[in-house]
Every structure is written in C-alpha cells, then in structure tokens.
Image (spheres, helix red, strand yellow):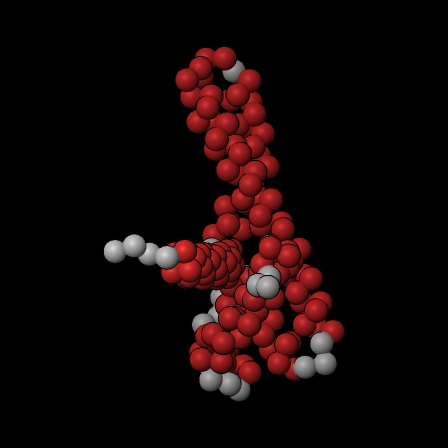
Length: 174
C-alpha cells in the first residue's frame, strides 16, 4: 500500500500538533509543580520558624568558635565537616533575618490595608508561627470570632503573598 504525498503531509502535521500539545501540557504541569513547591516551602519555613530562631540564638558565638577550630591545623580531615556546619549556621541565620524582614513588610502591608480581613490574616500567621507565644488555630479563631478553618484559609492566603515577597517574581504564575 503506497501513501500519497497529501496523506503523509496530513499525518506529519497531526503528529507535530499532538507533540506540541503534549509538550505544552507538560510545561504547564512543571510550572504548577514549581509554584506549588514554593507555597509548600513557605509553609515549611513558617512551621519551622521557631526552631530556626531558637537555633540562631548564640550562633554568632558558635561561628566564632568554628572559625577558631578552622584556624587550628590538627583537625585536618574534619575541616570540611566544620566548614559545612559553619555554612549551614550562616544560611539559617540569614534566612531567619530575611523572614523577619519579609514578615515586617507583610505586617505593614496588612496594617495599611483598608480590609480588616488582612489584619486578621497577618495576626493568624503571626500567632500560629512567629510569636514567642504559640497559639492554636482554635485559640486564634476565638480571638477573631471565626471558625478554626478560617485560620487555615487565612494562612493559605498569607502564604501566597509571602511567596511573592520571599521568592520575588519567580513565585508568580503567568
């Protein structure tokens, strides 16, 4: 069976069209996964904020001690491990400072908003993850005369905004 040129051309166009649609669908899936991962990362940062903050207490002294250890030649093989610990502590400290700054920016944004909802959203995130006194979603909802589920919805909204503050333009979906 011999195919004519017209049939071959039609088959080729259909194959190319199908391949392009598949590639576009895959690209959209990857972009959505990247965006979802960033939102999840914001939640992870918030959930672990108090631990990070606690970890950073006295970190300047620890960094100085690690620098002193690195200055001693007898460590030899452990130098790489000590340098790795040092970098990890520095990154954690930098991230905590950055989160503090972005939370301050977010607080200002919410306080300057005309919507009471924005103020409530900030307070929900603050008391759930940031403040020295940790409140439960139930406690926060009682303060705001809302349902505990509203607290979690508020956190979702805050994470979207915080994602753009922390990750910048890379956090946006086009």
